[in-house]
Length: 348
Ligand code: NAD
Image 1 (cartoon, rainbow, N blue to C red):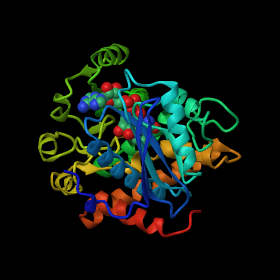
Image 2 (cartoon, rainbow, N blue to C red):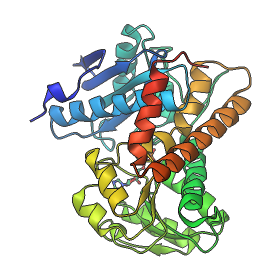
Image 3 (tube, rainbow, N blue to C red):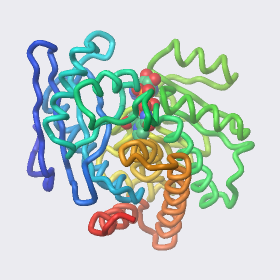
């Protein structure tokens, strides 16, 4: 049973329905202290409304931390659409979702997340202007996933430096969970840098195809938690790091793109106690929202803006990991402190 008292501080949570298109969505605005709330739309066949609500409340809170730590003039928000990506994705559904976003008058900006791509965002844009991650148009930033992957790639190198003394990837092994939009881009960067990969995905065809492409070791979704590697890079769903999976990990570093990787925040201490350096997800995966921010803010030189913000993010991750190791605390605690401080400050 979802305990709403565990979710203090959300500014607004909206249930949006449309009978004709079958839309059932929840939009959560966690904080607009730094600017309009921005965050992706996740489309999943949630079994229960409680599961969707839990997800959107957690994810929107993470967006507040993420946008603050990335030093963006944006607050935290997120949307979930309860639908099956293989069956229910229609233009009418996304148009109805856009109308719901539009009614919020710009307090929430939508972009893509799991189950949703740039083409879907283009349909949402027919009924609202408060949408980013568009494939075409004067300010279109396109799919944010390659920028997310670039940020994760830099983050992996920093985490390796803190644990091994070197950022070099040649001869290192990275276990990648999830080969979708971010995971596939990350695999390409890692291979190019000379890393060995161990890969997994629930989608057997995608797994086989990626294995053929790179000639690397493919394992089952369960095995990925036990393989010996330098880095585990979760790039699939959230909540995958719990007591059971952390106990089985055979790595020095956890650094990946997935949102809300820890089942509970206590898992950060479990990782630290096991000597595994954890790059907090909302720090290492903020590359995508930086790309989205350039589009929302209509900055004049988006490439320069994204590079400058990504460099700042990388420096912040370096600071978080360094401080955590010096003080013997979990990187999550340090990152939350920095982000919380920034929520109360005016954006640069
Ligand atoms: P995606 O839907 O394109 O890919 C996810 C992949 O993970 C799919 O191929 C799926 O089959 C696989 N998968 C799901 N559960 C799995 C499991 N238990 N074991 C193995 N494989 C599994 O999603 P994406 O856009 O690549 O995002 C991946 C994660 O990164 C998500 O948690 C997302 O919220 C987060 N994220 C994405 C971005 C972005 O720019 N796309 C930005 C920040 C965070």
